[in-house]
Length: 205
Image 1: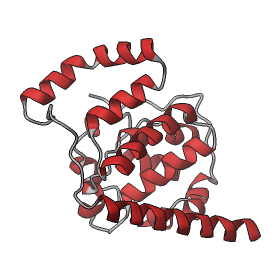
Image 2: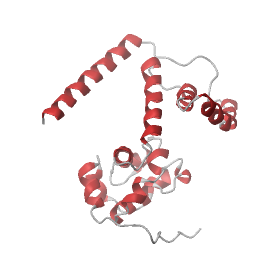
Image 3: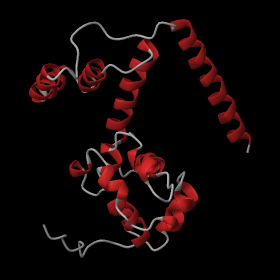
């Protein structure tokens, strides 16, 4: 399939690459990318992205700020780190994608309501069980939009859920839970303490 021509309405921000260099973790290593494509070739869900990681880096260099920050690549990334591990130049591709996703929210390019609801659902599972239960995270996220919307979204993904169950990728029993719940709570409390201390330091500066 031929690569489509760039959108003529695209606005190019020639300072975008410098901005990523200065504001996104790992962005200072983008200049090392030789566009070999190992990252995109290693991505297990690259075909579900509008732009793979290799192309995303190319667009950053080209100053395609709006396209990059609206890309579904930022949200489809599963953080498996294959791209980072297989990059011959050692570029932290996953960290860059994650950093861009956070910036997309803070700059208004992403729906903060949706992303924050999912984050809260994910965090709820972690704090209660010490790990994520896809069924409960998904259900809590869907029903955060209301009962009717939750049922609608759940039914819309019923086939996917059944396929996962039949292939042994999703269990039907009680949620798996870490054995040391006391240790988990101690870790969470310490993390909250560090976050509060760091936030206090930022406010003073």
